[in-house]
Image 1 (cartoon, rainbow, N blue to C red):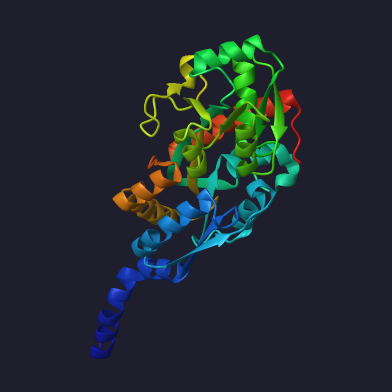
Image 2 (image 1 turned 180 degrees about the horizontal axis):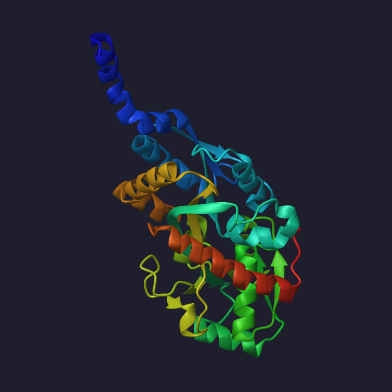
Length: 324
């Protein structure tokens, strides 16, 4: 072999060895993390906490892209329509990953099972069952006794028709044999106002700092959490499933990618996500948001999606719930 050919081969060797890494880096110059809600909400807040840590781990620019609308469907569609090149990820939850496709049906524009592959869990939160101070109950047993003794006289609030709070309340009524009237509001803030004023008597919802403040001050009463076990965030609070067996509901959040994404960027993002969720500052900030870090793998995400699709489909059909 001529000297010039030997030198050329030697020079090319490092490039050949690192070609997969170089190609991956070239593909991943900018990674879009799609949040299917407007900026300022809890899902957006979690994404912005994770963004710099994910960016450091993958060595590429990570941009939080808020794409709100249609209960998260617009954001989900944006990811499904993007190339499966490892540059677009989706921060999903109960809404766009289960409830919204059930409500919109063929108009959803995506299938949460066929069109997405889970990267991993991010967080989950117990829901809180709270009542107005006029309701003579302090735990789940006394609340159920009061509700059963007053069929049709209790109103429950939700942040909108088809919201997680609406569906979970309907499920509770079904499982516990209660007759209550649904009053839908536009967002969570007015549901708390309605509960404070006595316009409604019950609210089953995901926690916010405002809600926790009202509970701490005694302006509303916390009756139970919907987690499997007692919540360390709400010590001494009853667990709903103790009185209604099987009634366990979480608000959950997960990182997703569109189907067809190569395994290399998926594996890289899974590793980056695990590193970010192990950070103690991330855990502290998430607790401030009212959620707990959940670093479970893609199998847990798939399980949550299947479970939610099954039970919320039944509630939506039985109650004839239609999107607003």
